[in-house]
Structure formats: structure tokens, C-alpha cells
Length: 299
Image 1 (cartoon, helix red, strand yellow):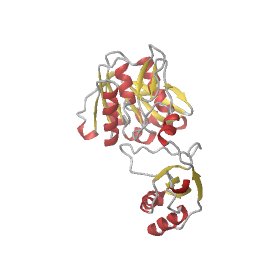
Image 2 (cartoon, helix red, strand yellow):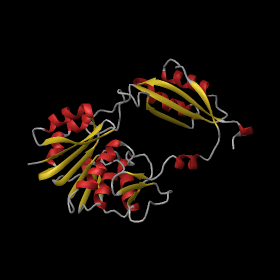
Image 3 (spheres, one colour):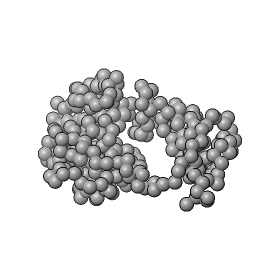
């Protein structure tokens, strides 16, 4: 309980790409309990998803929305001035909001419920009751690695896996995140599944999720990947890295095998299709909220 019932406070402001990361670190040094940075342009045509995929240099949003939580004994605006001074930046306009104390764990959990992501599959947080008897489910909690089934790009892949994955297939999930697509592929009949990601935390999360769901799936970093061809290759990343990796991903598909790509906006589809044209023909399989999944077969 805070002293005399004083509330926690949240500092809210925007920061340009060249200062957001340093300013976030400086706020922690100045007494912030947590700092959250998101795309200030989220929900607009200028939204810039950032997952740090292979082939892309580290980047940041053009404008970040920064939210910093402070305990009652730290003055947020003074902390912001101190952080800006440490970083050599001008102090931006900011607002301060009172944050009443509450059961943060229960509040966070209440924001997540089971998601019916495909005809046969539910994604269920560990603290929730399972869906009706007979439904296929994966137990998956929101965490550091991207992928809980709520994003359209993930739903697109899960629906293709549910509807079209050949039973007994060897599957490669490149950019596996939380492992959700790899686990779904195993649950729906894949004989062998490999998940690859550049993020060590993603591999840790994927291994945990596989064990938690009793799914036999292998996960590794790119430098541990032994190569080889697969019946189905799935990559739910973003259009730029997908185009960079076109030669590599196409080579991982066996002759007669299938490639499924997602993380592509509708306006980017033709560019991605053109990047893969030397190796295989892609078409739009399905769209969801402005995103598309592209599918093709290597012949």
C-alpha cells in the first residue's frame, strides 16, 4: 500500500525515434517503475510494426508513445526533466495521470480470455476455463514473445493450418515468436516441426509453450538451424524481411511443397509476390483487417 493512500502516477508523452530508447532508460534511472513504448501512429495507415526480423537493421518507430509509471514518492515531471538532461534532449510536453492501486495481476488477466482463432482451435490463457468439451486448444499466456493468436496475421496462418495442413507434413515455422504456429501445426497432424527465431527469448518461450502443451516441437536460433527442405514452410513476419529472405525461404520448400507467408499488408502483397516469383508463384489466400496471407507451391 502506498503511503497515506497516495496514488501511483503515469507520465505520458511522445518521443522521436532518435531519443526514445535512451529516454526510456533514463526514466528508469530517474525512478520510474516501468516504461512502456508503443507506436504513436498505431491504428493509422502509418503504423510501423517492429519485430526485429532477420535481414533488417534495428529500427524504431518514427514517433513513440511513452508511458512511464512512478511510485508516489517520485515526481514524474521532475524525473522527466532529469532524464532529458541526462540525454541532452529538450523536455517534451507531457501529461501526468493518477493510477489508483489495484490488483495488477488480476486486472491484466481479466483483459485476456479464450480466443476462437480457427474452426477447430482455441487459444486459452492458463488462468481461464477451457472451452466446450471436444474443442482443440493450446494453452498460451501473453508474454515477451510475439504471438497469442489475437493479431490478424497470426489468425490467418492458424486458419490455413487448420484447414489445409497435410497430415504427416514436415513443417518449418520461420520467425516462430511464441511458437503458436509450430504448436498448431503439430496439433493438427504435422509429423515433424521446426521453429526458428533470431530472438533467444522467443526460443525460451516457444520451448516452454511446447512443454506446457505436450507438443513435440524443436526450436532453435538461425545459426543452429541445420537446413533442409520441408513440406510446408510458414513465415509470419513482415513484408520487408520476407522479401529479403525470399531466396532462403523458397529454398527451404521441397519440390511440390507449400509456402505460407503472412505479416503482409494488402498494399504490399504485389511487391512480396514479385520478390518470390523467380522461385514460386504466390497468390493471396485470404485477407483479415487489411492484412493478407500469401500461399504458393514450389513446382
